[in-house]
Image (cartoon, rainbow, N blue to C red):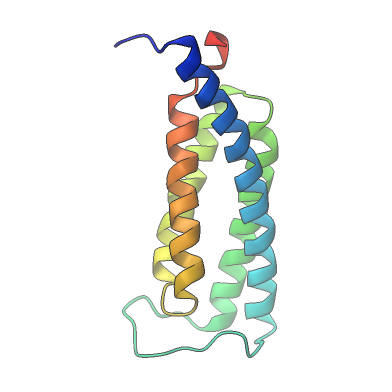
Length: 132
C-alpha cells in the first residue's frame, strides 16, 4: 500500500471535516423530511407503482431514525475516532440505499444525498488522522 503525501492527507482531512458537516446537515434534513412524511404533508407526491413502496408514514419513521443516526455519527466524526470513521462509512452506505428506495417520492433530493454520501465515504476512507 502506498503512502499518501502530506498534501493528499491534508485534503483528505479537510474533506473529512467537511464530510462531518455534511453528515450533520444531511441528518438534520432527513429528520425534518421524516417528520414531514409522518405528518402526511402534501409535499410528497407518489407517482407510479414502485417495487420498494412503503407507506409514507413508514418512510417518515425510517428517515427520522436515519436522520438521528447520521447526525450523531457526523458529530462523532469530528473527533477523528476510528469507530466514528467506520460508523460514518456504514451509515453513509445505508443512507445511499434508503435514498435509492426513496427516489419515487423525492427524486432530486435523493440523487443529491446519494452523491453527498459517496463524497463522505471517499473522504472518510482516505483519511488517516495520525498522518496529519
